Length: 478
Image (cartoon, rainbow, N blue to C red; front, side, top):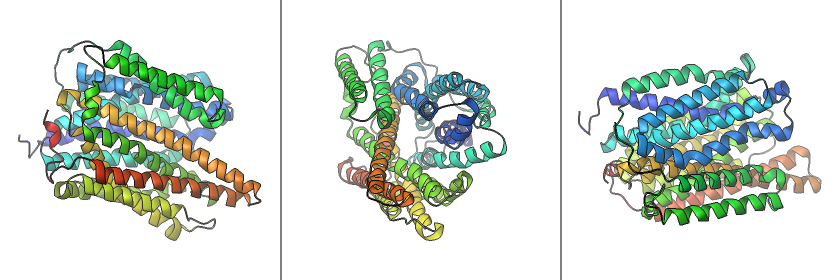
């Protein structure tokens, strides 16, 4: 086997890892369609129902960095299997839940397992391929799984909830998780490496708690109020813990995150792009789904079908076009072009009318967003992983995944607040209910378009240039 021509075995291992990641990605959105059924069955209030989603986000976002570092120390395959087992068992608990407390606790456990799987899967994939063309192709497929899996989750969630029950959106993970675990043991190579150094317990505790508090403040900000003492107090606590973490990392012998890691310019810029990009992606995914449901009157299954053309375009671009563009032009120009297309797509949604038609008011924006996401996601991942040593790849993966998670959570909270405030203002000015609602979505879509445009500028101007053909292979160098 050569670097330029990986064995068929390696591609099978890659598809197994993608299946594990897809299960995690699906679970972030598949539950949204089932929330009304869960509320009616278990008697959730509106406030308590949010914790079915928030419990997952808290543990997932809070534990990504710790999970990535554990993968570097204990071995990526071993930690991947531990996370997969935790996620699968938690899915069983969710599916069998008969009380609010059991479901919320199981969702928190799901988030923990999902964080572990997400943090190390990218490192395992990077280890499988060293040739530039194969690595670019693999990153394109992985990017489609991450970017397109969410909208697939809406379609699958609507199908399972309407034909069976909400329990099956969780129980369906059992056969998938077991199959992925068995295939991982058989196909994915495991590096038998000893535990190197000590785990930075103080650093792990401070950064995990800081991220958890920050996400809690973001997801609870709309309800408690962004300027309320509760929200400001939690944010202050998160910042204090983050300052403590930086102090600890600068003094301990074996830090959880060597601060010098952020001297890698492309990792830092890719993380910034990830925050802005995920804010824009959440504007697309959640707000366009709300527009189609609340304004156009689509049912959940029809909303899922509406995303299908964009997913198909994203798949084609991620698997073939994006890799070719990276090989020919490097990572900067494809990244900037893809994000610019996404910004234009969101701007088109910002003019969608009350009586919008799918063919003229939804499909063109969807196609641009699918094209942009399919082209841009591959270069973002390659930029993030391209400068770090192999023994820090899990940590780098955790950093960029945390950036994605924080950007998505913050973007959703800010854009939802912006949409709600605009809707309230228009309603107070005498606009009809639908017109006020659509006006709020328009304002939020414009903000998402602005985030994508800024991300395009950062990618085009601030990423370190890489020669075409080398962008996909640089991650093999220490």
